[in-house]
Image 1 (cartoon, rainbow, N blue to C red):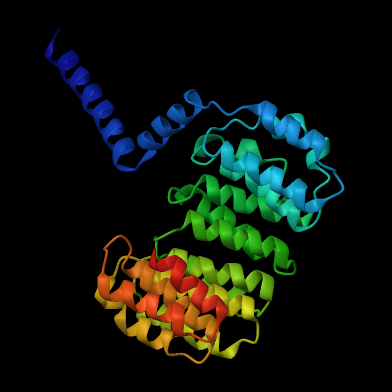
Image 2: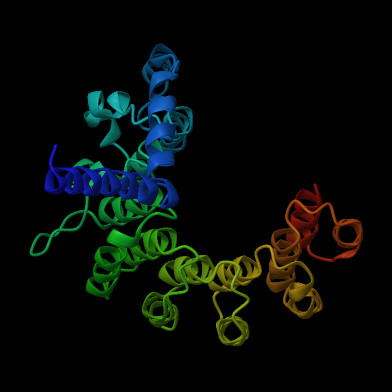
Length: 322
């Protein structure tokens, strides 16, 4: 082998090693191995779900939706969606938000199947010039976010454009906001944050709740003062409880893992006269001190669990203290 061939061979080896190193550091290799493991070790008994489906009345939305959710949880990340594909007529009985959940359940089943996401969801996603069911399209955008959660760089712009195109449909906006928050989790991208904030300021309860949650996801663990001030100010301004609840949890997400840095915000939220923001304060304690075993914070949550006048706040405190 002459010198030129040796150099070319060396460059090829270096290129292969660099490719594998990038795939490991980006998490792509881990995702592939995780998918392979879940698929090869999937022992879910499809007979059980088929039996449940046959025994339940199709007219009852609650039991229908519960069956869809059961399938999604049992097949999470396995990519095994044959039950849904084989029962499309039964699945089509879902209406309104149940249809949204049914579409989103594909994202749970195919979590991490990032290379095939557009092919899998293509028939459900919004199409330019075509008007489909907003619940189906919104659910599909949420499903896209679930598939690409924390690894969605290449899909952020797609979901953001879908959000901007759905200015007059709060259901599609709801799904797009959730999808955008998941794909852009912890990126702190200002253009994404601004798009979500614009949706929040439309003051739609349905779209605003999802936008508020997703603002927290985008700013996950950032403790960004400007974002926190904007979210608190709007929580006091809006009249929609759903939006306030979304902002409360969104604020908690911004303090994920920040421990003592979150104490000022915790104090502010737990002393607020609005019980929904005190509810958010409990989540802020839990997320800021997650997995630390911090005894003073556990004691504080337990004290809130027996002293706050709001059932929701007491419920959140006792659950999160555990």
